[in-house]
Image 1 (cartoon, helix red, strand yellow):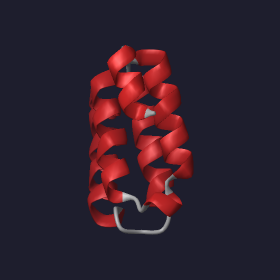
Image 2 (cartoon, rainbow, N blue to C red; image 1 turned 45 degrees about the vertical axis):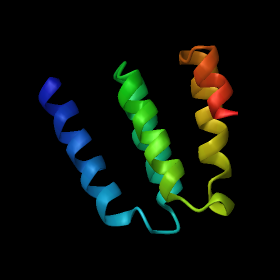
Image 3 (tube, rainbow, N blue to C red; image 1 turned 120 degrees about the vertical axis):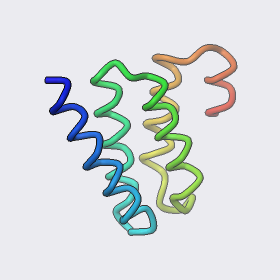
Length: 85
């Protein structure tokens, strides 16, 4: 199972490198962050959200932003939640 997780992570990483400027990048980043969240990799997921929010234009990042806020409300501390909002 660990090998499959590693392979899946590798696919996501390569996809984000190639498609980070794509119009659909927001969907990819959210899926990657949710994958890491499902693997109990909270810090990895947080890093992906923050990386994505720096890359995806604000006008196309509404879903990404709302998912990040929900993520911080679930996993973050008070400071993390305030930073997200």
